[in-house]
Length: 201
Image 1 (cartoon, helix red, strand yellow):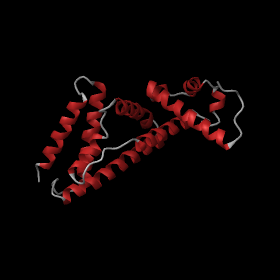
Image 2 (cartoon, rainbow, N blue to C red; image 1 turned 60 degrees about the horizontal axis):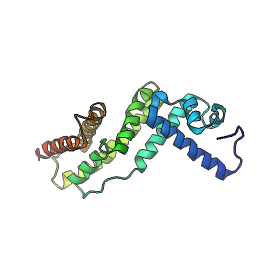
Image 3 (cartoon, rainbow, N blue to C red; image 1 turned 90 degrees about the horizontal axis):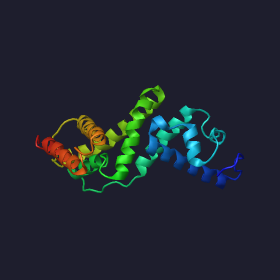
Image 4 (tube, rainbow, N blue to C red; image 1 turned 45 degrees about the horizontal axis):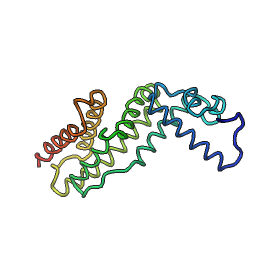
């Protein structure tokens, strides 16, 4: 599909970069981070590994790029819209769960990235920052629900950390045993968790 020479125009370069991004994503979705190699991405593109070294001089550069791509795709996906307060907290947590094929695919890629990130301090720090941003957003929603009297008083950061931990634990269970944790049950379990939390008011 591709020759050995690199395109010269800025437009061609940006188009090629988009194609590389899509190929990286397809490899991630099909094989996870364990299967993400320059050879696999090159095969997906119909290109040579030599062409890809223009973008990724080493595998670590490819992994870092893939994590950033995953982060950007996650941030750009459609989110549920809900009223302020507890409904907004619920919507944010539902957005984490693998309730649709697309959300399941995205979560599978995220979970497959954990081992890769844990093996590299810099990548691990990037993951920690991403989850911290998620907790911070959730904490703001929790604080609003507290102001409305829908959640009990207390440190919103602590409540957000507990809620995020619950949701991520549910993600793992649903990915490993989707029959036992279909979307309906995931939603019911989340609603049970939030009802128990709200009952402390």
